Image (cartoon, rainbow, N blue to C red; front, side):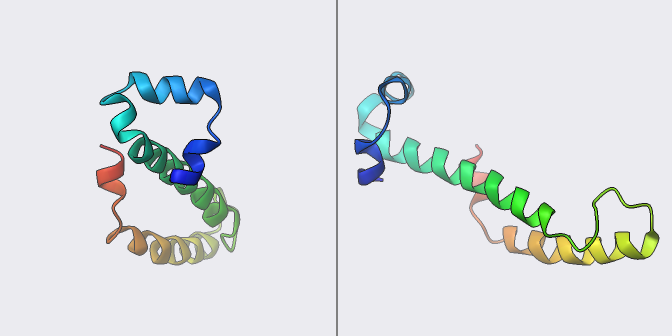
Length: 86
């Protein structure tokens, strides 16, 4: 997070300084934003790699997608996602 702090554009530095405890938790805020962004990217990747289109009407394809997505969702059970989004 230290490296990321050095490359923040001025408008983001100002935004993070105004929120919460200001400069004291800048790295924590950067880390949270980064984690949320990575969650969005990961979600898009998971959805894009589903075996069949997510809007399929075929029950067998829907079931295959469900099995695929459930295996990914199980990984979130032990993640800290709930804490980051609070």
